[in-house]
Image (cartoon, rainbow, N blue to C red; front, side):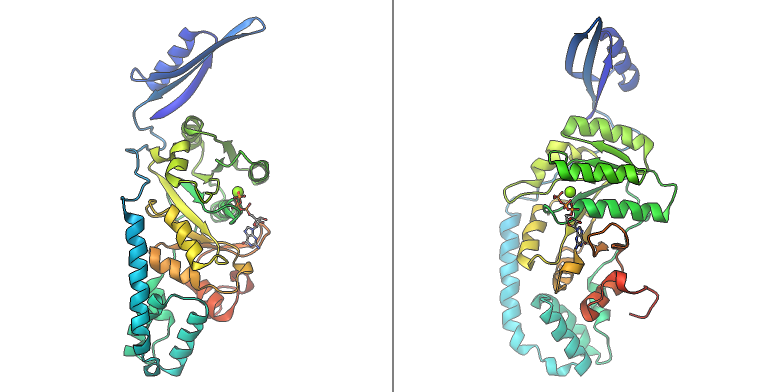
Length: 357
Ligand SMILES: Nc1nc2c(ncn2[C@@H]2O[C@H](COP(=O)(O)OP(=O)(O)OP(=O)(O)O)[C@@H](O)[C@H]2O)c(=O)[nH]1
Ligand SMILES: [Mg+2]
């Protein structure tokens, strides 16, 4: 449902506005009237069940995974671990070339899952001259952040403090770098807490980008409608999710399930254990598509979780962030960046990309 609040001096004039803008099918959701000094006012919130032109609404999307999915996923993970344990003694690593063996052992030290190691082994055993980057590249997808992410709305989700707001601002700046004329705005869904709110508003002003705040589905519906008319990209900064919070409830609270053209980016950090990351991804499992943004690479000492997550989710990596400042701390993700990170311990900002990996 598309919802908007209209104001005027009399009920009649407000109803006329609603009729003109939303048509005959509009329904009144709430009405408030009052008097200030000597003038009267009337405010009516109306809704209409049709897609708007600028940003397409959709059939309410289902942000809940099928029932028993969690249990099934847990059992499957256990089975995979058992299989990996059984297979380990028969890995026959001696059949690899010394270079391949060293690379695989390096990945094991970086906490790359045994199931991933097994998948890398098969092609390597067939060809002693094959570089490990070849099967690794087949397992991981990279879709570098930029204009090519054509969806109008991009929503950043993830745990508290992981770097969602910083990543959202840096990714908006990257878009601006790629296309100076791109009109970008932020929608802050995290305005209950002072700091994050001020930060995003400040950067929006500084970078000459639009800024809106939303608190519920009504303010979201009104905002997205306005923003879609004036901006090419709309970036939504979501609050984190606590242990007992549900993503489905969060999405419904803000009414995000009602828009189709929305891409979700899960913001994650490799300092978290494999288990912690799996639990976080579980929370967002019902989102389809989108990407993973990896933050705080500069604070991590192993990066195997990036590989494990890419393989287990099949999601593309879109960006890497590697510093607390705003400048030169985020890069659209490319395979060579991950290879250098894992095998050479080099952050994306520490070399220029046209050098050989
Ligand atoms: N070292 C380092 N610090 C980062 C990086 N990204 C963000 N930070 C810092 O991490 C802290 C939290 O970043 P935010 O962007 O506010 O994280 P958030 O997920 O929006 O946090 P909440 O809104 O509180 O949930 C800030 O001090 C950032 O400067 C990074 O890549 N490296
Ligand atoms: Mg934030």
